[in-house]
Length: 118
Picture 1 (cartoon, rainbow, N blue to C red):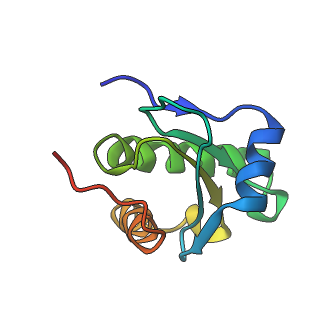
Picture 2: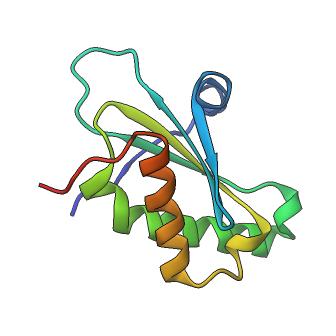
């Protein structure tokens, strides 16, 4: 399975935050926005965790958990041509993994960014 395409520049994160839609769940916040470029097939994903999540070790662990959930769900269910930003919350660290995956799935559905597996 190929790796998910990533958002890396601050400007990309700010564009999704400023113009995209978001959904809040106990384990994460998902922001989604269609990209304007033509001929785009794969979705891109970015991960972030603020200091409110905890010290650096906790933030890194939260991002790893979000990355694992995204790798489980997004390849088969993310809409092509969209940018996604997953934001860690304090609950990201303690939420059971299955519920974290469920949070991501429900957020995708609520944002209208869910694609049925083919």
